[in-house]
Image (cartoon, rainbow, N blue to C red; front, side, top):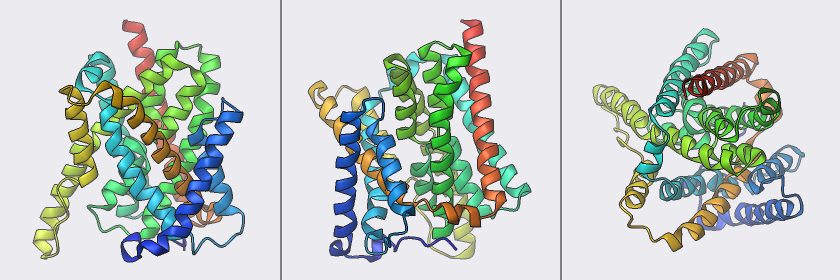
Length: 338
């Protein structure tokens, strides 16, 4: 069994303090690594530092509530702030071919991953979490689906671990593949934004390639994130009907942080966010994602992943390969017709 962190909702603020202190130290360490080695983003460094903490044999029971708070709550705040970085005109500038690429990639990956999971014997809830995380936006999507389902902590942590593992592999593989494919920076940005699982992982991947890749990747990835809202609403609607039939409590139709993301996006689109606030909000978003990735890294247990059996690892591998190849095919098609 995966040893999950105690639920933050059942812990007092004092129990969060030890873990949050370690998160602050981890964020500072990640920022220092980024200053010393510019090619290593603070997000990637935080993930590595968290994974070292989680797998070095040191007991993290006392730290678990604070680490879980960073990985879950701070991540959600960061997602809300992401909305400020995206305006509807930015999405429309991508053009219809790229928007169709994103839509097709998400739909095919979501339903194909569920098919993989059923064929390989994963539970329905675990398969749903993995499918949403891999097709939309990683741990944030897993957390959102967990908010409207009855998934247990083991399913959640397994899905997050798989997203983190294969997202890290994609962070290395895409820039490496780009040297052989000789794609333009913007094309690599589209590819990364449409295929890499986490928002933070997309940023870390595109930063290695260049500024043009980064700018495009962020918009494409955030366009994927926007699709989280209708997806969660659809899952929640289905669950509400099931809950109504069973007489149990109905989940929210749209999670609060998803609504916050859309509200921030609307404010930016209506030019209600002052331009001089964009940079500080982006810095705050980076810090929040760095903290969240440190917490996520600490939650990954390599031995626990192996204990889930080959089926979970196989579903993650197949889903990652599928979304990578579909999005690459779409990028090549867009380049061909442009």
